[in-house]
Image 1 (cartoon, rainbow, N blue to C red):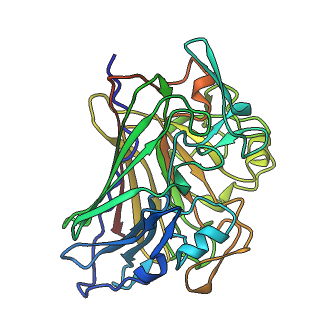
Image 2 (cartoon, rainbow, N blue to C red):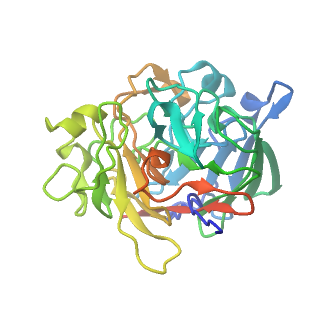
Amino acid sequence: MKIITLTLLVAFAVVSCDQKKSRTVISPDAFNKKIDGKQVELFTLRNKNGMEMSVTNYGGRIVSLMVPDRSGKKEDIVLGYDSLTGYLNAKEQYFGAAIGRYGNRISKGTFKLDNLEYKLAINNIPNSLHGGIKGFSSKIWNGVQNRDNEVEMTLVSPDMDEGYPGELKVMMIYKLTDKNEVNIFYSAKTNKPTVINLTNHTYFNLHGAGHGDILDHKMYINADYFTPVDSTLIPTGNLEPVKGTPFDFTLPLVIGKRINDPIQQLVFGHGYDHNFVLNKTKNERVSFAASVYDPLSGRYMEVFTNEPGIQFYTGNFLKGKEIGKKGKPYNFRSAFCLETQHFPDSPNHSNFPTVVLRPGEIYSSACVYRFSIK
């Protein structure tokens, strides 16, 4: 059976109030280094409207994204560091990273596939998180920039990399179009049956990176159900309705409105760190998943995806110890993530959508983050 799993084609559409060409806040020289004989680089993508995004082949990361506010002032709205050294020396928070082989958690780092048990690296006791100790977020991808607005990255993950079976060949393309859309597309093939769940872990703050918390942002999530978790943030296997709970974002709700409600799920997550089961529109390649609005700047962000789920995370493990771009600390709840995905721990839940990829099948993934001004 051919599997087409759409996880990440990311598109950003920005209504630009300022036609002046933006300038990157990141120096390419700060990423010019070899690690284990492989060259790390910073690639800057531009379009004719002056929109600009920087990505690095270290972890396939989005490093910066310049987006205008309602007055036309461009601001970098993603968390990260000014240099490769920042990423290498800091505790891993997965800023802007490509995540694989498996995004999110796998319980106790074990799963069965075709009656064989596999043991993964444990890096989030007692579970495996975001691909293990050295997942795709710390790999040096092969990057080639063929055009001003496009870079292609490839990676070969060997058989039993971090405990995952099969050699996995992955391709990822970032493209910035003249419609102010940033597309990220993943495809992958394997030579043995394996599990896969790729996503992107960009942290957003629509005020601007390092400009306060995101508790005043208004969130909408197109999901009537979510997957509750245990104390280690592993799904119980149940689907619970959001109606009447702090997880009900089916009408726009200020993120901070109920984030501190004394209920078990929010205590387990230290806030929101949960997978939402998206309402899907039949026959649509990508359907609407979520939106976020910042009343202060006027920036409005929409998310579209073909994935069955989306992880909403509110930066609950940021403690201000991470000193980011321009020397700004990244404090508690100073960003949010919306990670389009298959569900966490899917290999251990037969009622969840499958994440199995077999030889001869093609994995691909798509998501859209669209920005405009309100």
